[in-house]
Length: 354
Image (cartoon, rainbow, N blue to C red; front, side, top):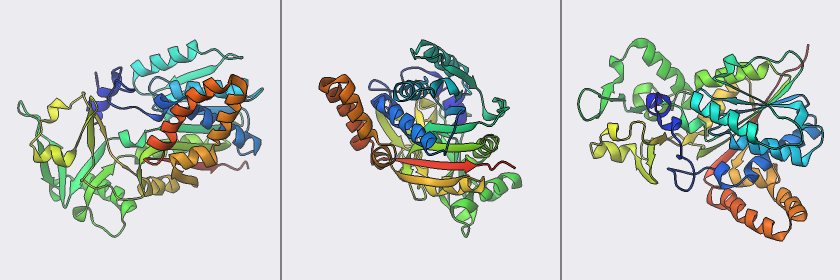
């Protein structure tokens, strides 16, 4: 999965995967007011002294950089003397996308020059040398991490020794002990009383990355983490996870294995994703020192927490009804088509000065 999505010529290195003509579309491609609502929420945190300037705004997995760019432009439109005290950063391991993000930010027109940088990971991003606050945003990030797939004592692997790449199930007890221990450690956060050999489902490999986010967040005076993902408060099952998206077609793993599907046909050609188990994600974030602010549907987050409808009314007063009418149809996609299927979650980590 890691090589297929992120390796040389991998799926996420290719263009035209997002949007109406691509394999899927996201909230970012649905409406610029998605970024506008996030900008509005950031400003509310500044007003409540939950964040302060200077501020770093970091997006993880930014694709072409459109969401972070929308946030920057709405901050410019909605406030004074904020934008010049913000630094915009993407965490992007793929060099092709990092170049596209840099070019996109250079093309934006704002009242003051934008401070933008991109880094391959949190470890390579310099830590602040003065008290600085931090806001991290991601959209459909946690469903794109590599995962292990288990089924009652068996671990899924893929053979690559023939013209067809077939799925095979390996006995977990035959795996190296360090591999078993690593998998059991992840299992402990899902259901502490269940042994690895009794579990059927997916184990996302989030832990090391969440730990790196936490180290970075703790180096700042005040830090917030916001994410939007598809999933629920449940243990993901093999009935619908993982899934493969290609040219607006979808196959789940269970179907693919029953049909003796050839994984090579999907390799670097399909998006691979799964439902995010928010209880597991919550456990891992809390373990690293984050505390939950809210976790609710995307629609409720945008309306009740981020006041997107008030933002639209303000837009209508400035731009007129016709412009408002065009935008409200796009926002309806965020609130209705995607609003209940996706979850919005927000955490904070506050470091007290000594």
